[in-house]
Length: 398
Image (cartoon, rainbow, N blue to C red; front, side, top):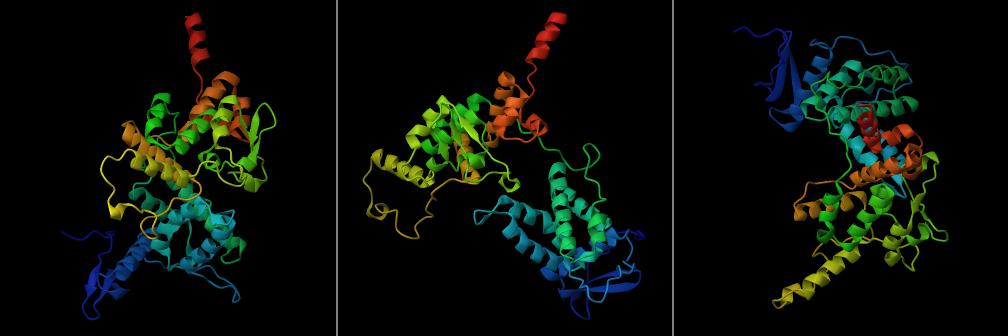
């Protein structure tokens, strides 16, 4: 059977050199490294990606003209410089935020397919090739669009630093995001409120610290990252309603204030945890672990073996920290769900639950203020619409 003219070029052994190769249009393309090595395979993948991005033709267009004083860095060089910038820019009190990790995930296929290519040659077709790579990896449509936007952000930064021509960034902006129902990429389920029964079920399967955070978040609609940071210093307790101002929050970099209001029920949850050391975090995993071990010792029926008497020796285990973060808080809840044999739910769904209840009773504007949104459009995402009034109206109309 004759070979298809536009079939993917094969990866073959070049016997004379022992290297990997592909043949296109009667020309051999040799790849660095021994045949079958990771280096050789990566170079082959990049070669095929470039061929596809060029409409199944060998790249033959000349690169955009640059002045002699302008360098032509590769994609790898651009990414290294951008990540150095990102670690400093997306920092939260000296430590990197989750955005740095998100950026690394986004640029991975860019580096894999075009890392050794000149950054100025990355155009819309190559970006669409990256989109196709993400679709093939099983990522969801919203996730792919978010990662593509981050890639474009990299090139915006590079253009602002005059590392690439600005036309490269503007060309990438022309690539349209994947649309619902018009792509092979899957969809994600919207985040919904979590049923109270599933929340209550984990109470006996999590620490006192985690359960206090769950109750507090369910009442206030605060973000998980705000709940884990509560300190006595950050609480204004003089009024009838307390005010909690987190040491940092999601929109702090925009100069926005964040106030979380605590009524009598929330105050009752917090009061036993208040500390004389004002800078200490109220909910500490190290205290939760100490309480867990104490309960195990108290309930132990067999004699403690000599090798088990001291679990605090250096190197025996990783010690818990002075505070939870969003990930450790979520993991504790997932473990509680497993033990309680209920469906998994994340702490972010508690925010949706609170928003829905508040909206039903007080309306959208009050909900926006409590959640700390600048726009009611964002609040609409969190607060489920109350269909009760519509149902009542139609029952009367008939």
